[in-house]
Image (cartoon, rainbow, N blue to C red; front, side, top):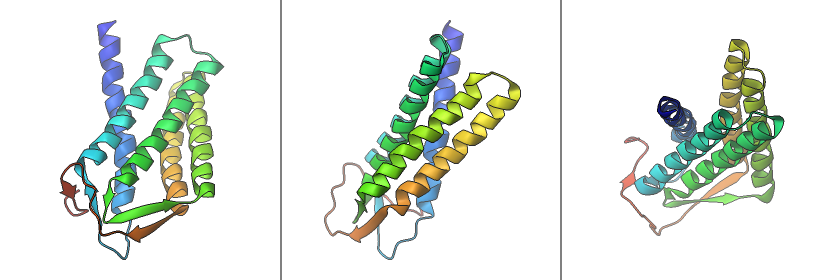
Length: 174
């Protein structure tokens, strides 16, 4: 039992950390005509959210009876967690504020939940090597798609007030 829990903890770090890394690599590619930094504490918190929601979903999938309902629950938890990670990570931007549109948020929520439920249903619905690989690839595409769907519904404006919680990090340092 301990070995199974330890494996899930490591898998949560890999899955959540990988999700966060995909998001942040995409953020590093964001070029804006204004100077901005990231608050290190808020950025770290966004990574922790990704790891915790991945762990929660994996615990459900490996310790509960696997049914359609648990697959949907795990996918929804990760779908909403990816959004929480994304929007908290966006709030880490300093000297720049993200302005969201209701349509952009709605599309991000729907796509994240639907795509993550689909990814978990593929990977865990019928546990074959093929389905696991296809589910993993689908999950990666889901994280990628959700980030760009959310960003497409976002505008950025310069602000001159720092709200920093932690130290500031530039794109070059990240």
